[in-house]
Length: 298
Image (tube, rainbow, N blue to C red; front, side):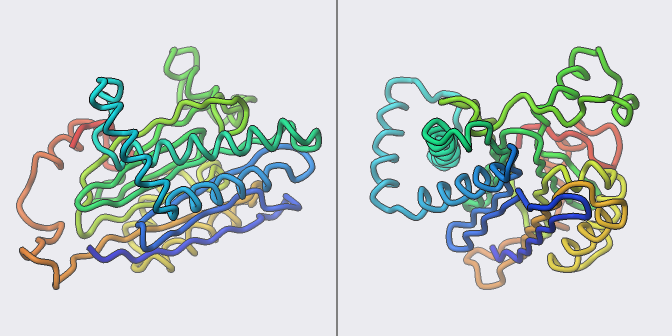
């Protein structure tokens, strides 16, 4: 597997500080976007602590060994039945660790007491990509002419839609559409949504803060991801569109392109090879070809 990636983060046209942050660890194939919140630039502290915590967590070999031992013990006790593998456990644990670091700092410094951050991350291991998120920063996957949203916003608006109190078409006029119901740093413990999908050569993944999705519709995101070659060009164009439409918030985009590795043993096939159960399951979860929520198992 060969991965091409590019990230860009802009303060936007209105805000004075960029409270977004991102992390790229090529060796660990880890990619993260965080969107901080809180007054007096607390948000940029929270997002920075979150990505620094994940970096330290993933690069600590001794910690990884201890975590693996703990994972095996918990599996024996039947307490991790919902997790697919150690890699999912590791990603979830890293984000929980970041949450605790933010919460601890906020508890010790009155100037930081309101800080928090959303987070979304991808971890590529073999043919799987593990997804984790808290808040309303999003992950998408573009594959073979379809765009799938891989995350579901932890927002008040989304909760109202799920309860059928609010219709999707009413969102532009909903006054609390940016209120999130889950974030890192607000409590000592946090619920992290994690799962995995099958990754294939030809896939394009995008992580972003809501500074993009509040201004650029999923249909337009689909068009750009489909048309712009190269992670750098696609990421730059997405951010340019958000700024063109007002740039009312910080905007961060991280693109990950997965390519075939011709030197890999066994001859990995490309994404255009024979049809698969994965595609059929993805299609069954989609109502149209642009940005269906992808909850199908792979």
